[in-house]
Amino acid sequence: MTKSAVRGALIVLEGCDRSGKTTQCAKLVEALNSMKIPAKKISFPDRSTPIGSLINDYLSRKIELPDRSVHLLFSANRWELEPEIRKQIESGVTLIVDRYSYSGVVFTSAKQCVDFKWCCGPENGLPKPDIVMFLKLSTGEMAKRSGFGDERYENIEFQNRVDINYDKFKNDNFIQVDAAQDVSILTNTLLEQILKTIDTVKNQELDNLVL
Ligand code: NYM
Image (cartoon, rainbow, N blue to C red; front, side):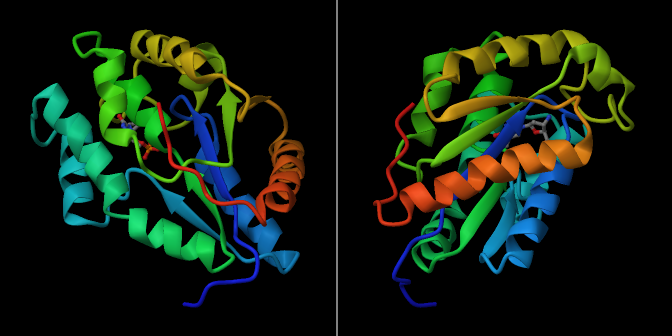
């Protein structure tokens, strides 16, 4: 894969469980590709790697792990894809990422026994997203969505704490969108932001994340 004249954008979708991120990521990649804009989807956790498989066993309650240990596995799962992320962006591909470091920090620190600042440490130095779009959904709405409750962390009390933790990241490249709106209207809202971002960053260096 060769370096392109312009780089791709690193776009992250974040939100509580069942907020529709996975559906939106797929639709956004499809929409961008249909406009002849090279784009791919990445999901964290990436359950296809050996580390991801351990994470999957933990989330589905097959194994128990200490909180800090599983936190570092989630982070290691991002670091194992870091070279590929940089390579794709450099070659002009826009990446639509389903969850990133923010999920890592807000979920572990919602356990309340692990310090928020400690959770940020292992994420520093990863590629910095050009924009983070936070899909906001009420916990009542979330509980109605199919599959909610199947995995670890999927209970209302925990998700409320996750939602509050996300507030700590709402700076200038973190925008909030209403996840309860019609699916295709939501796709268009996100797409508009993504197109603007692709254009803005195309000649800029990809930054490193500092949390
Ligand atoms: N999760 C996800 C974490 O606790 N830390 C992380 O770093 C990431 C990326 O995994 N409840 C949690 C959030 C979700 C769960 O994610 C699985 P998904 O998007 O439902 O596959």
